[in-house]
Length: 116
Image 1 (cartoon, one colour):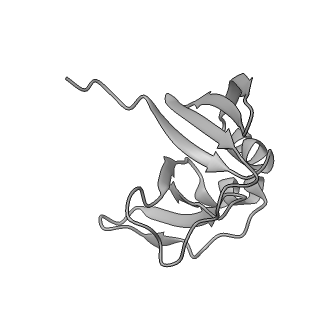
Image 2 (image 1 turned 60 degrees about the vertical axis):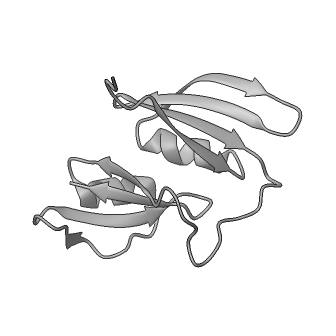
């Protein structure tokens, strides 16, 4: 039976994504250089992140494709987290049960929800 989430996998275009997710508390623990990409394994907050850095990969499509919609990360202080990331955030609003959240984008435009 399932006992937990093992990891999330992201395709990124550059090392900027490693920096972005590092600011969110993910730490790189392994890097594998391959012929067409670089795989960076990160851990943070009990979450595994497997990042494939490939500058030639096609960008996200609009409208958004079927499948995983966004990554949602719990933060303790949403306004401070946005400032630390040095990114533009969407409006801070309440979710279905009244908890504050907003969206930011990683360097490739993948939506990351910050949830308080």
